[in-house]
Structures are given as C-alpha cells and as structure tokens.
Image 1: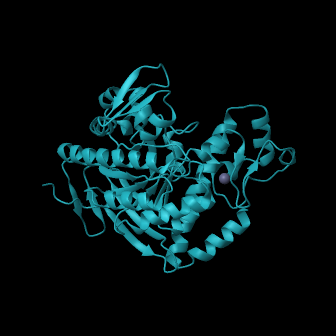
Image 2: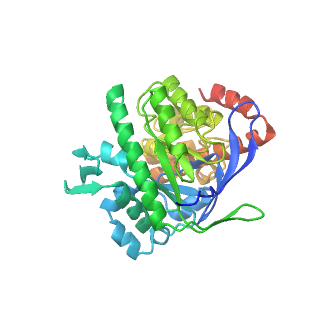
Length: 387
Ligand SMILES: [Zn+2]
C-alpha cells in the first residue's frame, strides 16, 4: 500500500466572502504563486518568445503538451537532451498535460478502448497508442514537474449516456495512471520551516463529466479519493454557456478537499479567470493571449482592442498606460499598428509579451487583493471597466 502523498501546497490567505485563496505550490523547479496564469509552450516554446522573455515576464510555470512533444521532437530525444528544462533552457516549473485533449481535438482518427486511445498523428497520419501508463512514462522522459493523468475528452454538447461512458473510462485510466506513477516515482517531499522541499514530479488527475452536475460531482469525488497532489478541471470552456461552466466548476470544487491545488485546463480571458478564482480555482493556462496577439488583439484594462484598427495609427501612447511590460514601456500604439499592418514578425513578439504580462500582472494584483480582503470589490470594478 502506497503511503498518502504530501501535497506541497501551502495556503497563505483565504478570502472571507468568496472561495478565492492565495497559495504557494512547490515543485522541483521552484515556487508557483497562486492564483497563477501559466503561458502555453505547446512545442517547448511559447510562440514568438524565448525562455528568457518568459522569465522576464514573471512566468513561474509553463504548460507543455505530451501529445505534441511525443510526436515531435519525440520523448526519447527529450530524454537524451536531459529533459525539457535543459532542452529549452527554462529553469522554472513545467506542467505537461496528458494529451487526452489533443488526441481528441487534433487527430483525424481516435479510437478509445479499455486499453487506451489509438490515434493518428496530425503531422503524417502515423498510428499511435496512448495508455494511462505510457503517458506517465512520456512525462517522465520529458522531465516535467507536474504530470497529468490521461482522460477521455468529449464533444460539447454531449448526451448524458456518452458523457457517462467517457467518465467511466476516465476513472479507470486515472486509477491505472496513479498506480503506475507510484510504481515509477519515489515520493520525496519534505516539509520545511518555510514551505516544502520537493524532489519528485507531482501528479494531478482530471475531473470530467461535461455540464452534468451529478457526473461532475462523481468525478470530483473520484479524483479526491486518489493518491495525488492536485486536481484538474477538464472538458469545460469548450462552447458551453458561461453559467453552465461556472456551475460545473462550483460542483467540482465543492467536492474537492481544500488543501490541494485546483487547475482549470485551457481557460484564459481575464474575466473568466476572475469568475473561477472566486469559485476557488488556483491555476490557469490558455493559448488565447498569444493566439489573439498574432491576430493583432491585445488586452487593456478597458477591454480588448485590435491594433490594426484605423484609430490606433496615430496614437503616440502605450497599449495600456498602467502596464509595466517591455512593449508598453518602449513602444506606441502607432508603431505597433504599423508593424502589424506591415506584417512584420516583431509585432507577434511585442504583442505576445504584452498579453502574457497583462495576465501575469492581473494574477499579482488578484493575490494582493485577496490578502487585503478586497477581492470582490476589485473583481467587480475590473469587470465593469473591462466590459
Ligand atoms: Zn504592456
């Protein structure tokens, strides 16, 4: 019987009016201050940015993808390069998702069986099998700090019967992944005077169940019963109504223990993040800020703007006057508008820097507001201005 793991998560402050909290998650590669936004380094890079840029932006943890890295450059290559940190010269934390979502969303052919998910590569059509066990092995070769168990993702909307079937498989796969992880990873986490000393990768499992309250509850209780360090909320932000998403988040969180981190997979607009922080979510990732940056769209405290619009061509002021990012400190809207219109690659880089820093600054601010006991007011004021 494996001993119950220690979750290296320390809650520093809780909001009195909501379920928002401030915490520190300790990994092999340092501390992640929560609530946190994790930039997405799909293929061991955040598009248009270097690892040094990400460090300067204040990123503490990057999200990378097992599916993508497994197909290219390959997990064996990453192992030979001594893992993703050495490969991409990043010394902060890395969380890898299991590939369940990409198998479902990117592959042209996916077959789910008890054994695992058979899929074809979106690059060359070659056939592959992901099992709960080999996905853990892949994450070990990648060398990430936080592993995620393989799950079955489903379309939205979905029938209850199909969601039930997918959840049953997700539960079985999570149990197999947890068992395999404990066979391979010796737990070495010690409590110290100030926090934790962590010498092993952590394991998170995913709650599914679409927007069916009873399935979400069952899934949350199931992952809560597993010997793991944290919890993911998957299968949401896939086109359902905001109220359905927020309700599903609340159902999951109400059925999870307080003392471990909760991570909402693939969510990343400022207002959605604030809604979920209020409901007790600690971690976020999303490709949204960099994807919209490459289309010329940027966050500002008054909502998003698109830099290619005529009105910005003559504005000699930063994207957001309160933003401390490199782009806002050095370049005007007029220059950024010109770069974008001229299709200069520098615009991808400068707009991505701003959008990621905007979310990281927002999380810094949120942590301060929670500690001061003024989170609800801050959230209300922010959303009012942002819309
Ligand atoms: Zn900025």
